[in-house]
Image (spheres, rainbow, N blue to C red):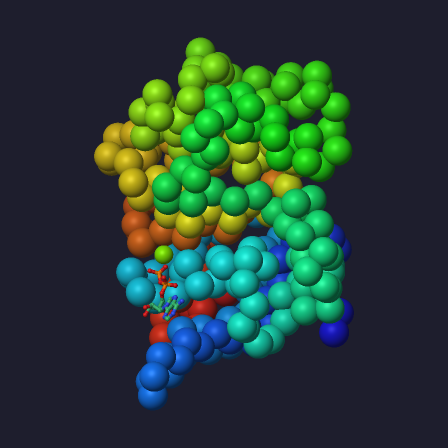
Length: 235
Ligand SMILES: Nc1ncnc2c1ncn2[C@@H]1O[C@H](COP(=O)(O)OP(=O)(O)O)[C@@H](O)[C@H]1O
Ligand SMILES: [Mg+2]
């Protein structure tokens, strides 16, 4: 199957077709995703809106190639994920995707700059330019004065800013963010989301951002809604 080109001819950074996922526990099977068709274009920021339990995290986990168990097609930057072995999926994740979670998931024994340097070193970068990029990203997010603080010495908003910098460190084509400000108070959430959107736009990455917050979703380029396992408003 060919990926659907965006209007300007560039291939979608993400294309799911008929994506389905069920969970069976005992004698009960719940069909969480029932055929999700979604295209995210280069540089586009899409809000994935739905109430708690609607399957937002399940969708992001499938697209993030973090677990199998789904059916249908997931193409990332033109590559069909189902055709890859574990090493291929790991490489695709490392080189094309960035992740931001509701809870920061930073490495507790490493300070802020090291948390942003490490993914670059794993990808093969030299230390000096990796540190330079990490410092630039953290400074752009307003935490340039917290480079040597460990996560436990940072506020919730600062932790999420470091997590955003880490997600962007390897210049991903697509950032997957699962309620990235869901753990913050409203004022901090607004500021962190604004900085996240500005940085993602500045870097030219695309993003798929799960949220149950209509107000936050309205600040993104496009909103798609998960309803009974399918998307409304998807292109
Ligand atoms: N590993 C799992 N095993 C069984 N059920 C699951 C699992 N993960 C998610 N679910 C179920 O899938 C539904 C959607 O969950 P989730 O994707 O976390 O929704 P959201 O992120 O929108 O709140 C829920 O009913 C949840 O209980
Ligand atoms: Mg969730």
